[in-house]
Amino acid sequence: MGKFVYVTYIRTTPDKLWEALTTPEFTKQYWFGCSQECDWKVGDEWKLMFGDGRVADTGEVLEIDPPRRLVLSWRNEFRPELKAEGYSRATFDIAFAGDMVKLTVTHEIDKEGSKFIEAVSGGWPSILSSLKSLLETGKALERWPA
Amino acid sequence: MSMDAVFKALADASRRRLLDSLHAKNGQTLSELCGELDMTRQAVAKHLVILEEANIVATQKRGREKVHYINPVPINDIADRWIGKFERHRVRALADLKKMLED
Image 1 (spheres, rainbow over the protein chains, first blue to last red):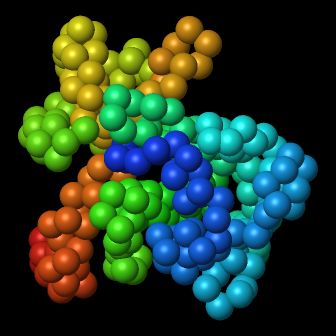
Image 2 (cartoon, rainbow over the protein chains, first blue to last red):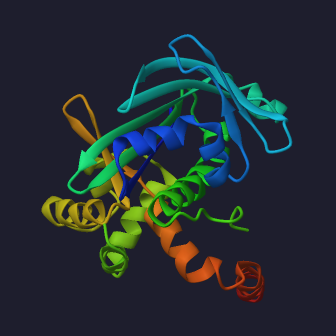
Image 3 (spheres, chains in turn blue, brown):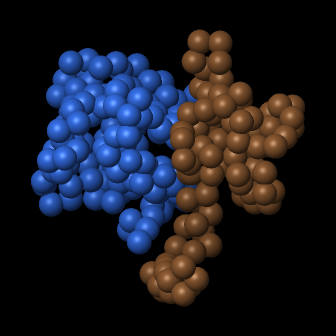
């Protein structure tokens, strides 16, 4: 199984972090222009779109417990070889950690040597650094690191 | 969680080897990681605690076992803080040149 676990500690509140994860206007700021479309109920379709409106990834809400836990099924839509791997699973866990909030993002797929997991593993660290920077300083990272 | 903790955690060859091992194969138990290094189990466990405290290693329970994952987010924060603002593409070009000349 291919799996990555990312952890970041952010000086913010769980509610604020939840809002950052689920509000398109907020997401766009730290996700390098990408935003999500979803009604945030179990079974709802979920979509991630590039800034220009193209669909990047799709899936479904598997579990939702604001502001603590969100589980999405997640499939790539713009690279045929990644789409062919089918659905992965992304879990967002939010917990208090002293005066900070701990965000754990787990992304996994039932496949050894997954190209999809390799691809997202390049993106998550930048997205999470950008999210942390936005919540703590009001400024996200400006572009994907080269 | 501070940058100091990250730099300190990285300032040790054994700990960097543990990170290399997790980079090659993510999600390993203490026993698996012990196979990588010529060190006692206790010493490896101690290094893992330092890596975990610096948040460059994240752990999850799998049954009774603890599984270790590399967490590059704090290193990414540092890269952005120290390299991102100084024209990363030029730094990258020099790194590529060095690699090409040395290979």
